[in-house]
Length: 96
Image (cartoon, rainbow, N blue to C red):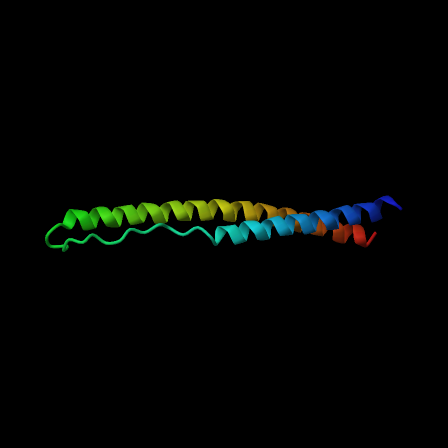
C-alpha cells in the first residue's frame, strides 16, 4: 500500500471521528435549560422587592445556561474545523 493511499484512509477516518465528536457537542449544547423560579406568592404592589429579586435570579440562571451552551458550541466548532481540514486533506490525497 502506498503512502498517499494510507494517508487517504487515515484522513478519512479522522474526518469521521472529528465530525462525530462535533455532532455530540452540538447535541449537548442544545440540552442546557435554565432553572427558573416560581413567581413569589405576594402581589407586586405589596412586595416589589420579591419580584425584582426573582427576576434577577432568573436572569442569572439564563446567563449560566447561555454560558454553558456557548462553551459547548465553541468546542463543536473546533471539532468541525478539524473535520473540514482532514476532509480536505483526504480529498487532496484521493486525487494523487
